[in-house]
Image 1 (cartoon, rainbow, N blue to C red):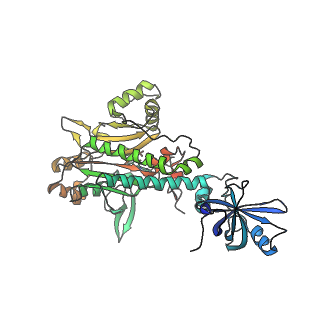
Image 2: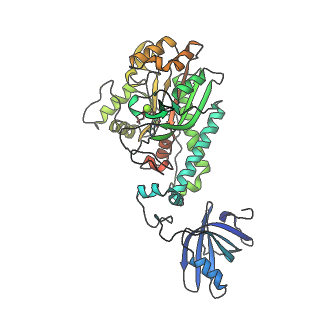
Image 3: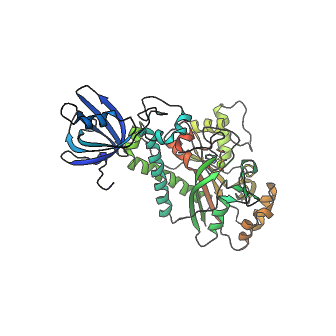
Length: 433
Ligand code: ATP
Ligand code: MG
């Protein structure tokens, strides 16, 4: 629509055509108001029944809520209108009529269950507080991309259909690939590592990952969006610096560019994390967890951190923090161990007080050690030959990490369920829409 004006741009004194959805109709007798909503906001349209053409009044007030209409008319100042202006209509056109019985109420007056909302995501995203989450998500991704570019990282896209898994066999989704077994990729891990040995050196990818998680939880999806980073000639400490920088850049961008969305979501003072994130070793972490007394059973060296353990430590630390120097045994084969203490790995996690956000580490780039690591973890190195063989031809030392976008948005906005941060979530029950 060439001559369309967004509601937010309608200025008193102008004659405009606005287009959008019928948010609400309030009939006060001699006078009635239609509230029209578009992506930029809402505007009041005033119908003075006695003074206006009957057809016009009938069309404007007879249309069902959530129908798409266009309204042409003069914009006038009106201090009592929600936005301080209103339109006195010359014409109203119904472009797409909505059925009278809506599966959920986009005006938000009637609450809907999450499953109803997800089944009707189009209508759900007409609510400003739902839309705000996805506008913030988009800003997070924009800021992350910009940050990566500022540190000389090249965006890549790698295959999502693969021959082998990388993150554990039970979470794989098998598919049939021209009569052969294949899988949906759980992570771009191996591909991004192959690229640090290429001429690109420093890369990032933002793309889907697929994991057949065993349980439905509020923080797992079966299809998630991962932000991956990998760089040649850095160690795990430098990789953590970039990780921290990315997170802060995302928060700063949201604080700077999403004031309106934050207000809609009720954040009066959105806090951008400041200062260096504490870096606790795994050993310090389990000591602190045990000291809180929150767990029934004390953790011993070698235990993975349960959800309860993460929560206890998160409360104790009170902000973002890293856990470094994990036991080699609970980190994947591609993470490098300390030469002087092979029980310890250079893997790290970035934690939000509520949950894990990122896993990363320095990678094993030495061919012999890499292949030995496969065998130790019970994986067949032959299956990964496409990957390991490149380590014979000059693979630099490198490190990297991966975030879940949904967890980043979920923790940033304090959303109770990860499904709130993805348009069309995939969980054990949900396969459509
Ligand atoms: P968790 O232990 O919480 O299940 P993970 O250690 O298996 O996560 P990683 O393989 O380390 O996950 O993946 C890196 C990041 O990707 C995680 O820190 C998380 O932010 C995100 N992520 C992983 N799996 C999922 C999932 N199923 N749903 C949403 N995000 C995920
Ligand atoms: Mg992890």
